[in-house]
Image (cartoon, rainbow, N blue to C red; front, top):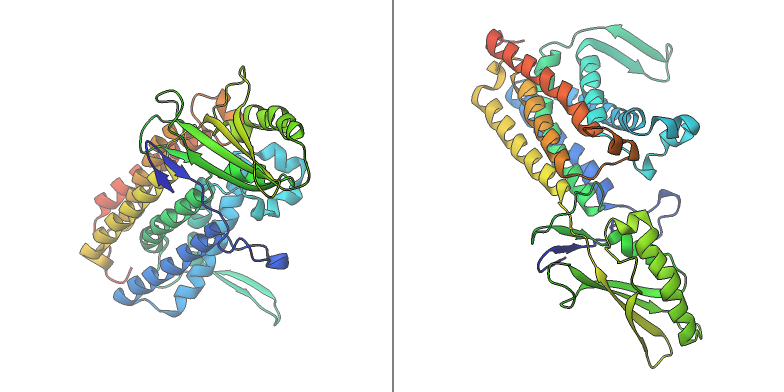
Length: 382
């Protein structure tokens, strides 16, 4: 990471990029942070259960419900809200979570559903007959609102972890921003050129040349020593590289290469016969909306935990849940103003899908919050 006028951000998403894990694939920072969200969340819920004298054995059961609800809800939310036609054309891709595509609004619905089932139903899956049992059975001292009031503290913490995972993945990027705290996400550009079998090394640095305020950068491409002639390298740069920088949509999100001008570069030959091309072009720094959401989620978690600590078991049922919906999705509506749309159809509607989905959740939160204030503290043991 480099800070000078704007932040150049290009972390490698894999924790051990040079290790081959076979069928498991490489372990990514996003996956680690996703897992950490549940591990830390479980510890927070264990503390709350101990303080309010609820059975410790229920923590593992609740964690399983939340994990399953989060993953299924987030995946189906993305499928239904953002790309329904794509997945209808190839339903098998619904199960390919490793390709990306999780929606926080879907995760919220999945978590709410899983908590309702946890609080009101007994489910058993095993190897003895009958293999699968579902029966109505309320969990003593753990009503739906009691559980969800405490789970939202965990969810807010988890939201911080997951959005930082998005930041390390250089995904869910913000709109262009001319500010020294804006972020230039260089990873897509680096990954694109690293796919080329003729290129050995790729590097991106800031440049002091160029027009003021244009955010000049230098893309260095070291070619492998394959006995290429200089004119062949120049042809590749003038045609292929120019086309990549101007015509590839995922690259032109980050690079402002003038389409009507020839590619500006210098080409030098090293002692081993390889060529180094240094391309002068311009970056497009953007809002780091992932960081915005991570920080606000963390602050929300502290607020909810503090409110719970004031009255603990006497916290009005629904108070924290309602406040969580109001603040989180109210801020989500605001954050969407600074985000790039995730799918093309959002460009044709007055508000993007994240904003449309946030409105009903905020309204539900207001209703639940006001109802909790009206009912006041719960009876002991509820």
